Length: 350
Image 1 (cartoon, one colour):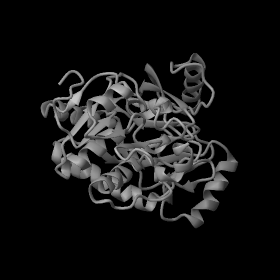
Image 2 (cartoon, helix red, strand yellow; image 1 turned 45 degrees about the vertical axis):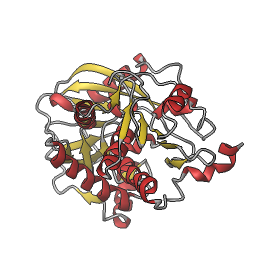
Image 3 (spheres, helix red, strand yellow; image 1 turned 135 degrees about the horizontal axis):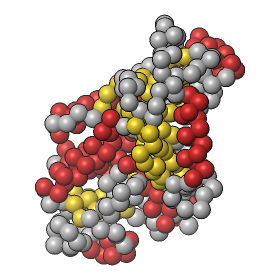
């Protein structure tokens, strides 16, 4: 199916096939619903550029990720089930080795270790990594962490949608879409395009640009994620994802020379082994001021919905809230009030 067509009667039309659109279409398909996915193919989107890390502890203050006790085990179960159903392997446990960049950061980790034993661990042999890294202030471990090969998942699911003839690859027009599918519920999983969505553009979006280098580091063991003021994450084809930036003010979505130079200098200081930069990627994330997702139906238009605003936590949050939305659509089950887009009913109704 290569173009918009009104001749099919779908229960749900999903706009966007990033991590949110993929998982929502999966859950609705599992409920036996007729779905159509509309997605404009782009080489670089927030989902495709993301590292794919599910990390229970984040930030310099080493705090638990929001709802991690619920969302992480749920996400892991869903991804493992998808592995079986799609006959691919795309989720691995890759714990984070946190190489403290300063004495203060080492002290902060040691203090937090006493309070957060569920996810923070001591590294028994602090010297075993000296062959690969410079680290004068020791190592801590964040465990468990998971790594999702998002590109492999998205590509496999896209192939499946194409085989079922329920994928349209096009740039969608909002008015045309509503007119073509008046009897379907349309769910926007359109990432950063949500900022311009006439139904949801009043939501408190805060676009955030991220950049990363794709680096060849021969000989570096791939069973961990390495962090020291930046993250070095196993990537596809034996390469490594190195980043990322969080830019709130930016001129465009393109990679910048300043980021490349900064990351290259950090790699030279951190790594003892040779490396080669092979690519430089960038995209804009659909973050928001509240740092909580947008999930649910429009307060005035019951046939228009949204699953968006995951920010940097898409791999962990998307499975949980895609399932919540699917259950809400099919069985009217409640959506977590902290994520339900109904909390913005006043501004969306104005």
